[in-house]
Image 1 (cartoon, rainbow, N blue to C red):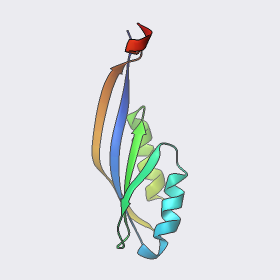
Image 2: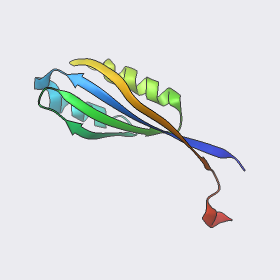
Image 3: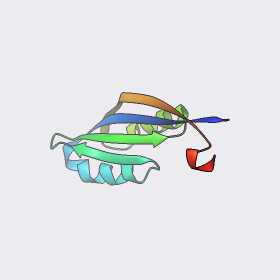
Length: 90
């Protein structure tokens, strides 16, 4: 039975506060991204749920390269393994 994995990661993105809404909209355009919090100082909490680690690093690079983003950093990364055949299929 094949095992699949899901990568759950959280990021903190620090942006220039006057561009907070603009950057949030750009982040949400990226696949598999969710925003779970923000601060008036320009910090955004982003959660990713992906099938591989490469997507996590690619997304960090994409966000970090957005204009008005000061820095993006990984805070949490967990890998969950599960069988590709669900219990309902057996």
